[in-house]
Length: 153
Image 1 (cartoon, rainbow, N blue to C red):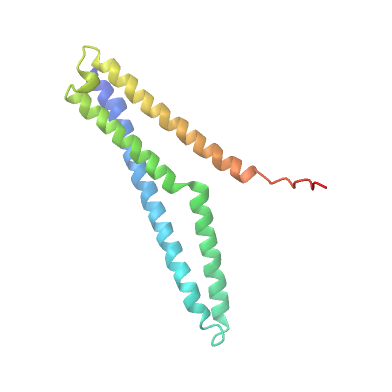
Image 2: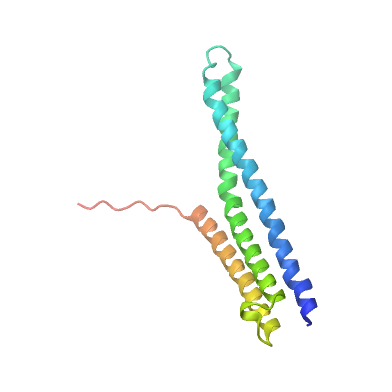
């Protein structure tokens, strides 16, 4: 594989994917969090009108459900964690690319392409491993049931 092929087909593709995924997760996280905050602020305001309108209690109940659904969605899908992880990986890949293109740091040698490939593949592998751990932690949290502790006499 030539240098141009590797940079274009592997490094740039991965860099673009991590950048797009980071933006997607950031936008989704910030949108849901903003909605959660806005709805949470409206609920106490509406409770002041409970005696005046019978329908307000249903509206407050629905808004409370929406807050719970949004909070659960944020925890379940981990948009914030993925946003940060993907942005970190994208910035690391960008750093390696610029170091390589300027023949700086570890890329001053004749084996700069193999150094680039090793470092890029390490970053991608590391991020995949981190993602796996994050998803397994989520699965463990949803599957873990606290066992009652035995009383000591």
